[in-house]
Length: 92
Image (cartoon, rainbow, N blue to C red; front, side, top):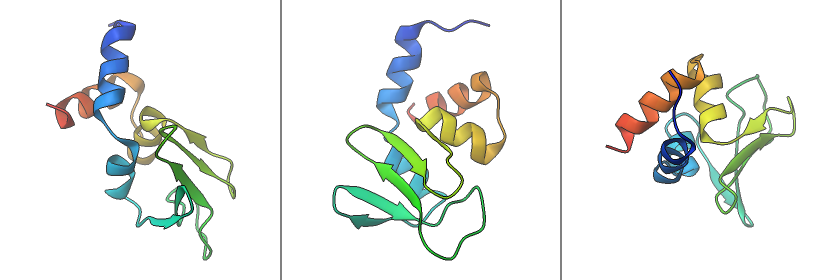
């Protein structure tokens, strides 16, 4: 099933990346970014960064990054339509 760009964008806007990631990763503010331990690989020093202004995440250790859809797809092992549905439900 295809979803319109307008629906995808609205779901993305209604799901703040900090709120979604915080459900999986303890984040601490470091300047304008939030940092935590990467949930995608084992590490002892935080290299996982979330930029609330750009609504993106990036891990300097494993080089994974993207928006809220990419995060949920990676952490929950979902395909895009499943991630879209889950985030749409979360945003009501």
